[in-house]
Structure formats: structure tokens, C-alpha cells
Length: 130
Image 1 (tube, rainbow, N blue to C red):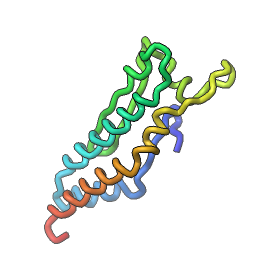
Image 2: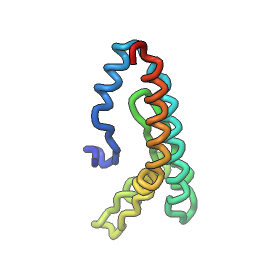
Image 3: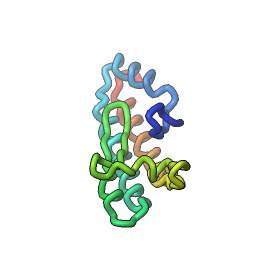
């Protein structure tokens, strides 16, 4: 799915409802923060390895973060503003897309999906009556 800002995301269907239900049941969503952080670190490492390397500056800007609700991997800074055009392409400038972060997320999906499912299982198992 493409976001309005041109980013890319993988959406877990029913994720908001699951978090709301777990919160109402008294579950600690901190486990999901750890899972999202681990997922983001995994994708970021794969993204750094896949980033086009002319000077290496682009790969050095790939950074992960995780919150209770999502895993995020970003690339680029003000001094390296070309991360978006390199990743998504810019036909008007004859820059073809090199979706290194999207490819990293896709190629590591089985591993990070398991991290996420394990965290959900641990959280749900602590909910009384589950």
C-alpha cells in the first residue's frame, strides 16, 4: 500500500481492533513495541545491505524504530535528500526505482512475521480468560 507521502507500508488487518481488545482486557502492549522494534531492525539491516552504493551515504541513513502500533524504517536526511527518488524513482530525471527498503521488507517477511506472531501469542496468553 502506498501512503500519501509516497512511503510504503504493510498493514495488519484488524491490528487496531486487536490492540483495543487487548487493552480492554488489561494486556500490556509493551511486548508489541519490542516486536515492532525487532522487526524494524531486521528490515533496516536488510535495507542497508540492499541500498545502492555509490558513496555509501544512503545506506548509512537507514534507521529503524518501533512503537506500540508499528514498525518503521526510514532512509535519508536533509544532507542525503535523495533517498525517496532513489527508492521510488523519478522518471522526469531518468532515475529508475530501486525499492531497496520494500524489497528488504518483503524478503524478510517470514522472519519478522514470526516475531510479531510470537509477541501476540505471549501477550494474549497473559490475558486472563484467554
